[in-house]
Length: 240
Image (cartoon, rainbow, N blue to C red; front, top):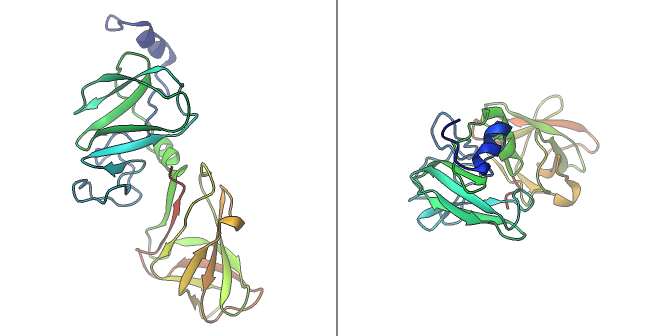
């Protein structure tokens, strides 16, 4: 314990450092980063304000993460550190969300309460993914990904309900679909032509999309899956 030089560091040592990093997904190495969007890592070529790696979006020549209100101790000294970053002490706001900006070449980025930078917190990948999915979920990636179920509302419209593996922080702002998706209820399957997200019929744990096609049957129960398309997905966005 000879390297512990402050009360803040001592408290973190005693507590085992669990949950000390207020930032999510701060390790950008290929082995550890959560990358649901399939970002190629090229921040210079990214669009301003658009998310790349989970929880991080482009801001000029930097990248930014918004720490959600309630996720930090207000009006308190915190330390920002990481590889490619000069450690610094910053004071949290008294309320609201908190924007943290770092250079886009940084990694092992950490924000912790107190005036001392400690070793980067390594988080179990399953836990890190769940933290990211509170804000964004992308369902798809296999040739026949199952999406959910629904009921025919007419001959041209049916519901799609998607139970979520992780509860969102709030009802999603959008949930677009992409790729080839079919509704199955016997044979032949129904080819989906478009989908319209219905936030008023959704919750933080269930997404509702009205799916359009030509051959639905009123009150028929359907299951939905990708139609031999690895690029078929539903993108569920509850980012700040």
